[in-house]
Length: 351
Length: 197
Image 1 (cartoon, chains in turn blue, brown):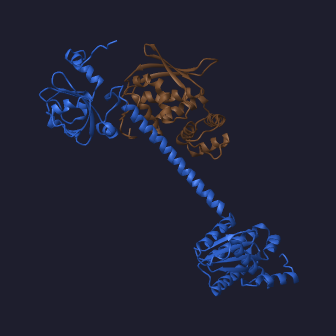
Image 2 (cartoon, chains in turn yellow, blue; image 1 turned 30 degrees about the vertical axis):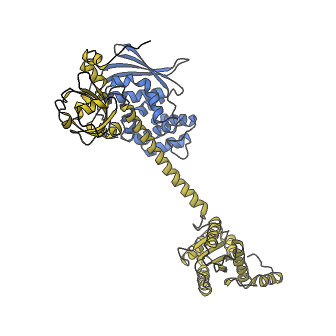
Image 3 (spheres, one colour; image 1 turned 90 degrees about the vertical axis):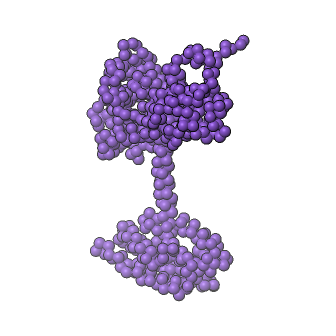
């Protein structure tokens, strides 16, 4: 079946559509007469132009961006249904796009849109819902942009809160709640990094002497106060780049990165013991403890595993205990046998 | 219930009655931690417990509390995004009413997982309308009622409204009498203000 033929002549020439109807259908259209001058402007387009467009000629009206060949009305008519991108001479800030069809009177009808500039255009010209035909999806699009931005902002805030929680959880997972020092997990990870890194470093194992007595006679609160004090001493005697960890009830471990001078390490250990031995007042009593220390040095030759190094430092710590506590020992080859002999003669008593 | 709904109720209490009031409500309802995340989902019972706690603390019926939540969503400066999104419906309160049937679709565009009741506006002549609210959460009727009252003010229209809870097999509905479309000077709305108004 043949479709009835509706051409521009039928629509406009025969005045099937009054200009007011065209205005409602296409509030952003303009009509150019055969002489190249604008004869009619849709209401929204009229509103966005600071000067009346009626009567303007092609050159005064627009600068065409694409296709570049269009210089005059004949060019526009030749575009026939194609997309034309341009700037209105009266509003050069806002690029527009339009659909151009030739009219039978030798002129052209151009229906315009803001394209991607729509958000800035709507703001710039203070347009309202009524300025667009209801079939135009501009309002829906503006709604969507604003709704999605709001939802995205909520999502962003949630992500920030979750990230904060995650960081807190990670910090808690790697630190000791009582002293704020690193915990065993953090120490193990740092030790692995040191070994992989290959730089020289030292491992120091510290075991408190007579701590159990404080806990038993003065109570857990006194014990906690002692641990906090020890943590403070260890922090004070180390550099920020060293890692101080509480790895057990009254056991501490320290990693000294790029610090392997045996004499200096023993000096540091001696100062630690001296400070730890300073009595800590608790109520009317005083907590008096000491510490035994074992040190193992890794020269960065990659020969020792983490377990080897911890074992060496532990061996040195036992040597300090067997030698009468309150002292530090540096691990040296053959120390295991010496400790084993001492252990056979005199099993190390728990405090 | 979607976190946005819960969060709206929380913000309503905090912004209107203060942080202490909200903490009381959260404690009463057993909400721990005492805040909702707007992008997560919560058990419906928690929402009901919170509403019950608010109703008791403010000594107000639940319906009145929910209406106040609706009004808050449209009028408070902290939630101006919602008022703006609603004002995209048209230039007059009449346009807004005519677009109500589309509101669930628009809500879905903004927040795809928010369950929103179906709305049907029935015109009964002489400025009388009936807005049917069909769907799971009957509480929405009162929130919509409060929001529509505030929006009528925002448009400058004079509207009388009465909400009706669902009874038996019948959906809930809101009776509206549009007495005057432009009764007072409405608030300005500019499409592109991006939150300014």
